[in-house]
Length: 304
Image 1 (spheres, one colour):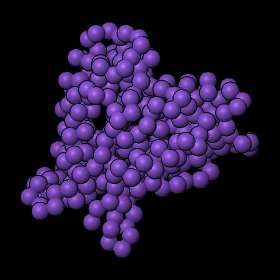
Image 2: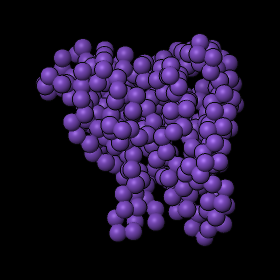
Image 3: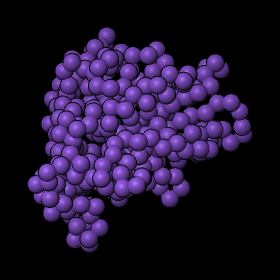
Image 4: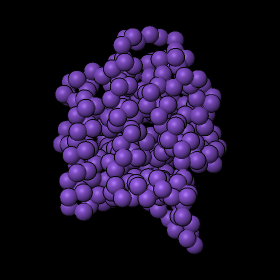
């Protein structure tokens, strides 16, 4: 998921003053599409080899679940890396469970496009960026919680493993990318899916949810359905990989490489949006000679 912090986030360094103006306008339209009949890249996660999201039915009560997949060196050893799939809108208990789990790692690598030296205060930034504010508003609308308000990023073993706004902007420019282009690709792909009957939801589903007596439940159901779709991610990544997924993952893995040099560190977590995990999966195998050895499923939210 794309997470951009407010310029008011605590920071001991400075960045170009125009970065928020450039990065906020288009993501607003981009994220609105989550609830507007277009699958968002943030959680498009599936793979022929490894699954990262699923819907589990327990006697009529369904749960949208996200995977935590453990990777260990092919040659053996005590070290391991857990890919912990993040969803930025979920039940409060999902984040409470994560906070407890994260205490057991030597290092937790997390995503957030923010300047070097910035930090995420407990309870989340006092002033959110436009995108984060929209995410928080959608969480309230669905009776859920917003990740940055619930996850405790203050622990010393939490390592920022993402681009700065300047790096992010430069990478997009180098690749000829823009948020307008991303939104256009999403809309075009979704329109094609609707024409072929492959779209996970349609306008009738949205209208029905808006008119339902239990709108929270209906929109939880819709969002869970959308987040199982993987086609949009393939469209956005293309053959060269995108800034939003591939390049940010590369930055995170550079941080992992440095952390691995400390012999005292045995357990690592990469806490990133679930849509990033298929790319991490491939790179941990190819570049770190690690293989998946176990999967644990975490409930993100429930619906009927």
